[in-house]
Image 1 (spheres, rainbow, N blue to C red):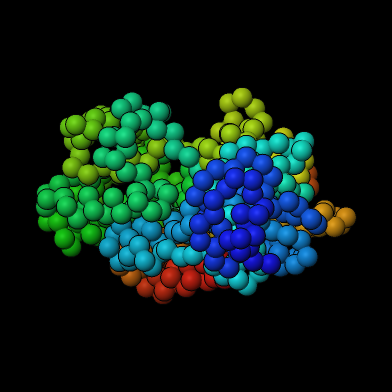
Image 2 (cartoon, protein in one colour; image 1 turned 135 degrees about the vertical axis):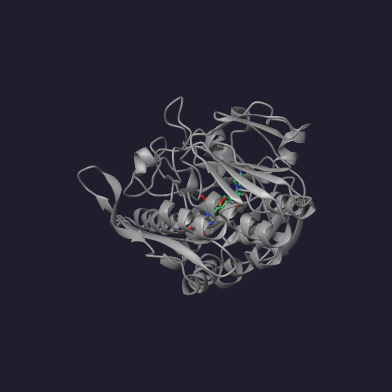
Length: 431
Ligand SMILES: Cc1cc2nc3c(=O)[nH]c(=O)nc-3n(C[C@H](O)[C@H](O)[C@H](O)COP(=O)(O)OP(=O)(O)OC[C@H]3O[C@@H](n4cnc5c(N)ncnc54)[C@H](O)[C@@H]3O)c2cc1C
């Protein structure tokens, strides 16, 4: 059922709805009461990124009679995977920007474009800026937040603009690309890798490779310095290091154990545990936590937790029955050693959707199975990859690796596979 503008206003107490396209509702002002009152079985999904869109689609595919409502603040789906190629100049923002129209049109998912603000797990309601949504099951996939305050001098708008993280694809991606293009030849780029766990372990190193590739071709005499908070490259290390030695020997420098402690937006000086560097452009990727909503909704289990503990079998949160958590917001200690990747978020979305639908229908959830493949481009054409499958271990009650490994080398063929992977998974998530 699509939501017409008239229907939606009827459902709300005070909201003013904007355009409604294929069941998608854009909210122009706030409401406080229950909107879209629940009539039958309902799953609400918070977060229309990699985990959330997958969960919404697969819940509806598993049982089309269940009403599925997706709550997302951003009308555009901008893909983090492939966004490093926008920074490197091989792709444009248009190549990584999509709508969620097909989820509404092909599956009947109702999409409400607004921000979720609170959860009442007893009454089973999710409060949003558009009003209150009742649910039987809630699946939460709010991504990550940056801990800007962990670095002295970074937690203010001037510094955030000067040193874009670009680990949420969109305006930050564009800002970093523009800074690289504007930099004079001979400039120094600093790329700061945050301490693990962070989203997309190989992401910073792929980005460094593509920036080095860009500098080599376009900015004579420039260099990029990677300052890594970790003691070594956290993913595909030997493959990245080989590519750097072969292609970027005089352009790229790698410094491990060099967490950034302070930045100075007026001078561009970056202070690390290994000393100071004067940057012309700096990509400071801060320490990451679960998406802010995970904190706001009361999903943290222990006072110092930064990610959400969930049962590894169903992804139901430790804190609240019938509330599932997927994607980058999940706690590795509770769920198991899976990377924070789009592919894992996609797998988790399917696991949680199936568990939610089955238990809603009085069935036992099935044993989870997850998959991850992560390609990294090291120049315009060649890629390396890491791949793994994961299963549930009944003894440790965690997700564990079943099989996996890295590509034996880099190749142009893997570069084609990288593009095909993106096309395939965007289709799985959004179409
Ligand atoms: C540069 C880069 C490259 C990457 N490359 C790869 C790759 O090659 N392969 C791979 O598998 N992964 C890759 N990743 C990782 C991948 O992007 C993430 O792991 C994935 O996006 C996680 O999905 P998620 O659903 O947890 O979060 P997201 O996809 O970030 O989705 C979260 C969504 O929730 C919404 N939201 C949050 N709070 C609210 C709220 N209160 N109300 C409404 N909406 C809200 C946000 O707007 C967002 O749309 C890469 C990441 C980066 C940064």
